Length: 287
Image (cartoon, rainbow, N blue to C red; front, top):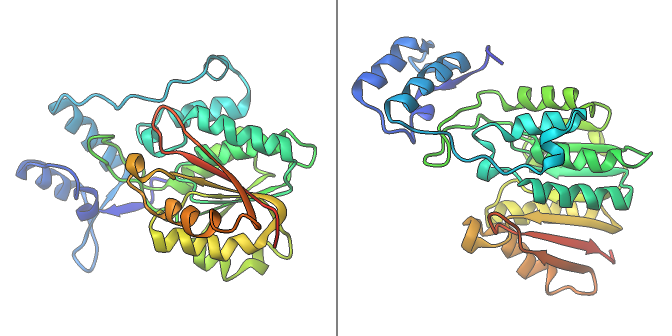
């Protein structure tokens, strides 16, 4: 992970920096032939530690973990706890309660094939895999993401993950889910154009859509992947209440493709805590 780098200009975009701080980053950066400055994870961690101290910034509040997770020695729960302790986890990742819901659904449907669009730092991925592990099938979970760097997001967090794919891959191994989880580094549209190489002729038992939250992006994910979902299978949308999460895409798909086709889909909307971003659970009942 230390070999990966990010552009200095992108890293500083949302930070309020003094001239002296900018200079310190430039001095620490690596300049390429196009005179673009790049930073390593080590450079960023050192800088952000000083940045937070100077401004008296405390880490954002982590999700409250249930007692069983906090005290458990089970591999995947220990790994999940470490991910939840990362400053970037709240509020962008699923809360523990939302994760438990996904796990419970997977544990009950004995899914053989699951596709996740958008896995961020891997918290939702581990919850899904944990539900699949409850079945003797175990099955395959394809986690599709571009795995782009996670930059500071003031005021929610002042941290940066240069290489999230390495973080996720390491978590998958430590959790004991290497046989279940398969990481696909791609945008969802490109992955869909090449179904044969990774999905083959298998139908999807559960599709979790949590990637591009724009109207066009979410609509494309639904239109490309829903036909591959088995009759009796499930499609789950995260972030369905724009008033709370500021994302329009999932709501648009529900209102324009799900609600108006009751002969094809049954669904329920779930209010979620601590932030009511919401989850919709959709069952495909007809091709």
